[in-house]
Image (cartoon, rainbow, N blue to C red; front, side, top):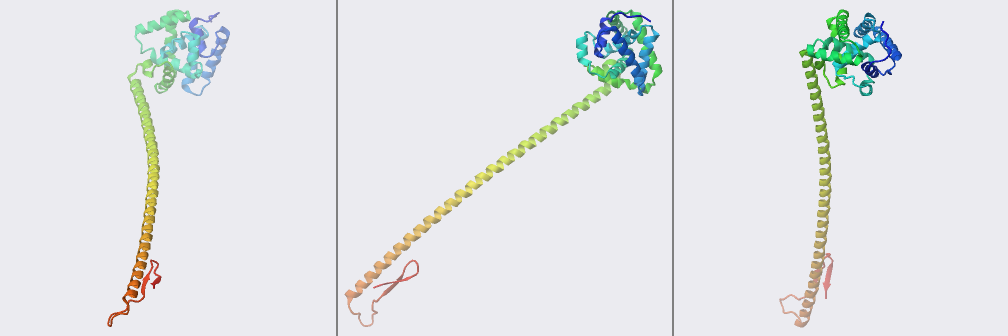
Length: 304
């Protein structure tokens, strides 16, 4: 088995996204344990991914370097540039390492065949430079990963890789279709986006309706309050006017009654004076005697 004394730049970047420091012994220990955890999973996809990486590790005599080459190829296909440890680590260091590994192997299986020969050569050249590894060796490792994965999983199980691929590719602004180039994935992705947009539109419309209803309710409440206040003021003003009018009528009545009383007294005095000056009445004529008047309260008032 090939003994690796130091990490290549791309291997260090890949180790960084798994949260492993750039030390050969620590990276080797991490991937040994990581592969064992994968193989022990009850999930067929995860367990098969572990077996593929283990086969690359021992089958090519490269140790963890063989596994790293496959994972690095998958990361490039997912949209990860593996340009720097700090940037890449900051972007996906918190991702589930098992999901990240399955996505990388799945991307190799589905994505490699979707590329043109020119695109494959470009990726191989980048891997060769970053991993400090020969191009033919890299191509052999990728072919091994595709072949072994196909042998271990049924066509239905292979489809489950796409969930891992879609979730990881999204972190780099890519869709499942960008990796697989399969029209079915494009249609599915478009339908999901349309559903999301429709859901967002309905949510926004619902919020707008609720907001309008709330504003309408507030406006109605304010209007009712103002109408009530104005109505109350109008009633108060009307009541005050009625009271004032009644008071005025009462005062006029009192003045009229007083005037009538004075007039009655004056008439009584005049009648008495005429009676005294006229002397005895002529035969057949009634005598002018006492005249009875009533005041405004209905009480008799006699004048002499």
